[in-house]
Length: 76
Image (cartoon, rainbow, N blue to C red; front, side, top):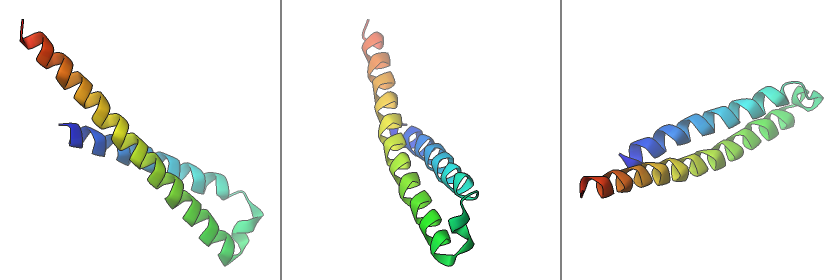
């Protein structure tokens, strides 16, 4: 359950950050060159990966906390 939650949140975070970077870069005149495209895509991939790793850790932590809390209540 923790891995599934982490995967879902990491996918959403990575996609959101990556697409936001690409969308914000579309207005920059630098994208008129191939180097600009490489920079925009590289930045989007790097920040998307970072957001995905953060989302994965956060999702797994929240799922683990929910599981531990529910396990604690089942003892009573």
